[in-house]
Length: 267
Image (tube, rainbow, N blue to C red):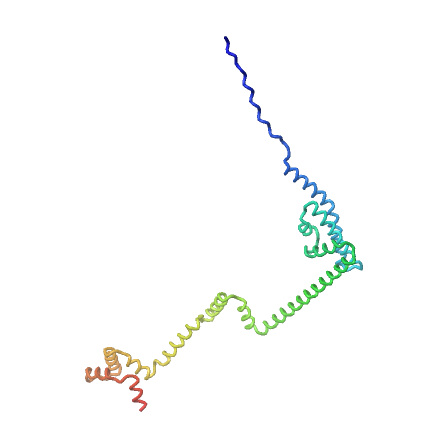
């Protein structure tokens, strides 16, 4: 008998992944299409807004109407940009010429009100505020210029004051460096207050070191051995022999103290 064989079911082939754009790809593509369509609408708006603001700045008779029209167009541009998910601040910065975003934002707020009396009143307030800020800015520039001219004139009359003021603008380390460099060029050195006091004391000692009183005081401070050595030196220098060195030593060691001698001299 032949053994019956049963065929095994064929293995299912793995289903191939469907090729094609993902949801993210589709969303990205849709966004790009929306942005392109929005830009077609926004481009002429940007041109009109720039023209109207330029004419308004030229102070034409209908300047306020030009600004209001520009404000209304900004409000329209905002709606288009928001629908296309375009950052409106970025759009304003890149497309509105000669105006800061803050100015464009104030105009936008007015434009959202539509062509109303309230919008015109706010526009007038905005213009008044800008005029005041410009006036203050002009006054400040004029005052700064005048102060600079007066300062330059004062510097010419008194260059020392100019140098002092310049030094005052530096930090402590830079001030010391400048002063030290200048002092060295003049053959001097920069010292601290404490060092100056110590140098003054040394100077006073040197000034008094040649007096008889200073010599007596110095002699009192010597030991007996040093006193004898000094006596021998004095004998040699003056050519006066010491008749009895032992007595001289005894006498020198028995010399009255500084305070006793001064008391005796005072008496």
